[in-house]
Image 1 (cartoon, rainbow, N blue to C red):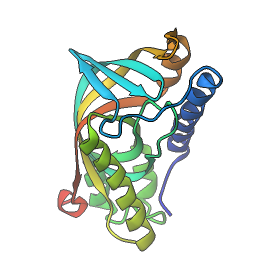
Image 2 (tube, rainbow, N blue to C red; image 1 turned 90 degrees about the horizontal axis):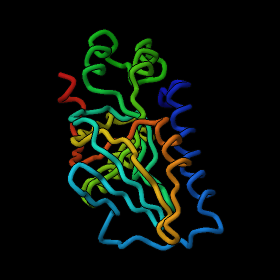
Image 3 (cartoon, one colour; image 1 turned 90 degrees about the vertical axis):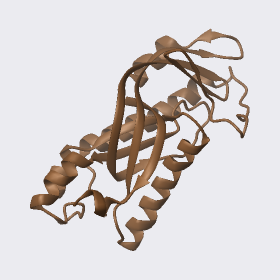
Image 4 (spheres, rainbow, N blue to C red; image 1 turned 120 degrees about the vertical axis):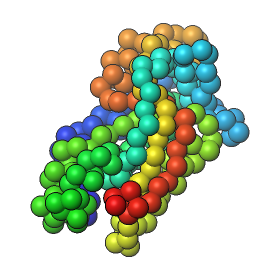
Length: 208
């Protein structure tokens, strides 16, 4: 079993509810269509990031840069209709992982006394992928995490470089209906990051 605290679970529930909310908002109003398979629906205009998913378009502003490596403790990369983010990761920043490991080397295991400390520092984050390569890395990292968890293998770490995002507006493309009042408050409840680069890292090497 993997350690996930109640706060992290609550944030994950919020994320899943957001996905359902978007689908409900569009019911009987938007005809769903598949994205161009060559694209992940992310484009850029100056400092703005535009994310198009099926028939919903959202505009985000970059509000800060990020370059962080996380030890994964869970997540979700399934794509749902009109979902504006590509993946949700529950990650422990490596600076905390090293601190906890110095006292509890087995902290990532449920029975370790260090597990509770790790839970307090988890950072559940929603990611918008900048391109296909970055999206593929996010998905692969979660697949690898699940495989290793089942087999009792090593932890999975991922480095993310990009920008923190804040949603500015959202609309239904088909009829140009403004959805900002519905989606901005919902998405403001969770952290959103544009993943411009992503790479899977060796956790053991990072812990030394």
